Length: 72
Image (cartoon, rainbow, N blue to C red; front, side, top):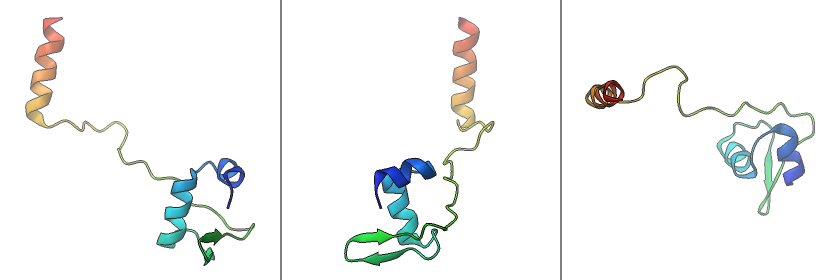
């Protein structure tokens, strides 16, 4: 698997290797140290670690941020 393939599917080489080893890319198989992926495979979308629109700060930090914003 080359970087050209990864650019085409919009996943990094590292992510593609991880998805292959976790079984997220169906029918990918390991030959020696190289992953072989058939041309007609449908690739999964990369998952975001954070949820958009959700406040990730704890309440105590939110209060500090609001105080700081009000001081400006």
